[in-house]
Length: 89
Image 1 (tube, rainbow, N blue to C red):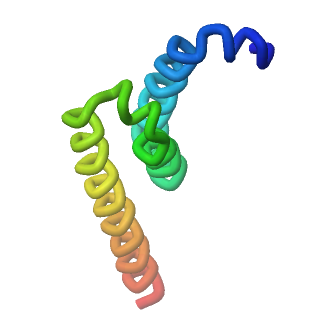
Image 2 (image 1 turned 120 degrees about the vertical axis):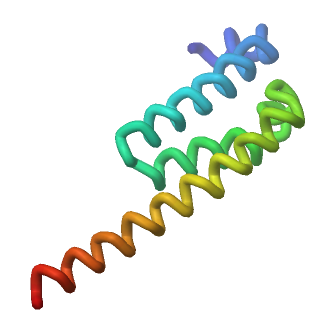
């Protein structure tokens, strides 16, 4: 979008961007791209306008989702390490 179009309807643009980042973050989780998912979710919760649009309950859910994603990523790293030990021995 052109900058003047964004400024003309800033609230609508922010609403679309907030929802887009949440949906893209979910898609990244689906394909196990956890770092990208966390980056998108954090972009939403760290932007006061986006967080305001989503509301406190959804932002709290996103915080929980980030923690779960980080745990999942960590568990995959431990599994890979275990697999490497298994194959070497």
